[in-house]
Image (tube, rainbow, N blue to C red; front, side, top):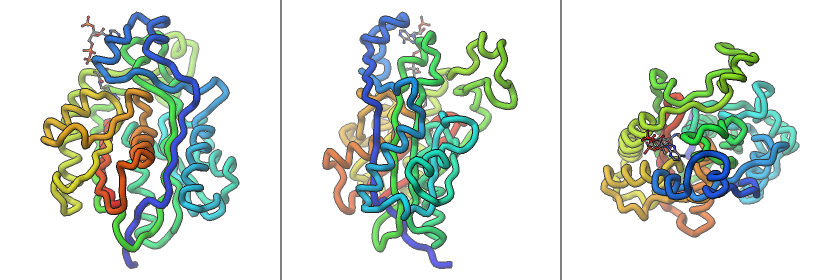
Length: 326
Ligand code: UT7
């Protein structure tokens, strides 16, 4: 089997219109705009309406990506949705999305926390590289607002809702030059949603103990994040046969500006090479890297042959990085 080059044929993202600022959050938990901004860099986030689910945001992002690739849903060979907030346990959000789009291809979901989009891109890329499929829709979609504990100030100020979508296809030149994936299940407890699965099915007790919401040890996740951002970035650049200086743009997972700045310092890369939009969206988990890539593209920060490093980390614990030549 010959190996084909794989690249990005189209890209899109969607955020729900409702803006929730740090000042709005001051009214529901004991916090302040000053604390949130200085500790995280976040000013505001988007929150989905009660009747909006992950597949709805994913649908909007996918339409934009399909248009930009000049493709119709009927052209798709596969849909992969990376999410930790699927519409429901089953059917897969990818199948719900397939139906909404009017596509006929197979689809499945992938759960890798905030590294989800990079994991999903690596999976999609294999199907194209080996010649099995030509057009793959990869989505990172989240409605984290639905699993946030709005009484827990240590987590509710961090997250937001969004979806991003990437169309992968075969290319003659450029495309993905490397992927690095990692996991440390031993750190799973640091960031989890304890109940609702087969370990702790929904019960009056799990609900009264607020176990259906995100629980996080922020300090330990922070330390892990700073370490893997540096290590995974260096590994992906090395695997691509490049050096740090060859990278034109860094697209990091948008969790906390302090994590991004420490990664820049540890790598000795100027901060302005790191794209940041977390001030407007907060941490949108699987959607975050794609949303940043899309906005960087719209802002003209990505040109033909630009070399882009994407890097993420999250629940699992997981991490992932890849080098993409545009
Ligand atoms: O995608 C992966 C997901 N997760 C992450 O990336 C999270 C990584 N971690 C972080 O970003 C940071 O650890 C946080 C932003 C979550 C927290 O920042 P920190 O500098 O590590 O703060 P801390 O947890 O050490 O808390 C410092 C203080 C505590 O008070 P005491 O114990 O010092 O009196 C907290 O109770 O800040 C308090 N605090 C708050 N105060 C006002 C925690 N949350 C808030 C809040 N408003 N929202």
